[in-house]
Image (cartoon, rainbow, N blue to C red; front, side, top):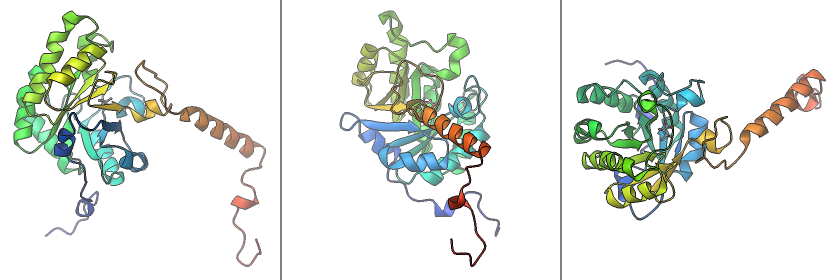
Length: 283
Ligand code: KIV
């Protein structure tokens, strides 16, 4: 038997209170609170306030300075997934499947989703796509992998769509988006993220689809909401219309760094209070 230490303390994983099943049961009863998380200390702070923490592939843009999510790989998602699972004790942790790791076949999707769950301790995966991904969602769901769908504006399809503009602002665009949400729900997704759609469309999808609809830029008609945490804290430069900044931590950070730089330069930091003395000296 191998005595090699497990890389992330699998045996010490706490049992989470929130499961995909619990999130599914919240449809029409309790609004579902979701945020993104990529690192342990942030996950620990968010955990008790959130039902679901998404390790989003937005990590590529938010933490690594990429200009889209397309360059994020599975190893990066797994590394951040482990970090978030170390910090989250009660929220359901969901790992985003990055571009190119699930679209080719349902078998490819299963292999990579199983790796993501078994190597992190997360409880579900998210993947983008509608009707064309329904067979894959069904394949994963029937084999023990809870799936969170993602339709409407799908950032991994930015090249195909030609940008990040909101969808469904013209009623003629509605039918395929509704069909996408219906197909993913019918295939067994425990919930579906609907991104960047006009309010009447979000309302119709929420009313007609059996599983919870988690909105991002999709109005308060949805069953729950998700935002990128760094966006709502004012830590990320981009500020889409749908993001309410609940804080301006970016400004707070800059003020603190500026004070630090001044105090290092004028030698007022570190003052005596932050300085070790020799043993036996009286301060
Ligand atoms: O990657 C991400 O953070 C997401 C959410 C914004 C839904 O997909």
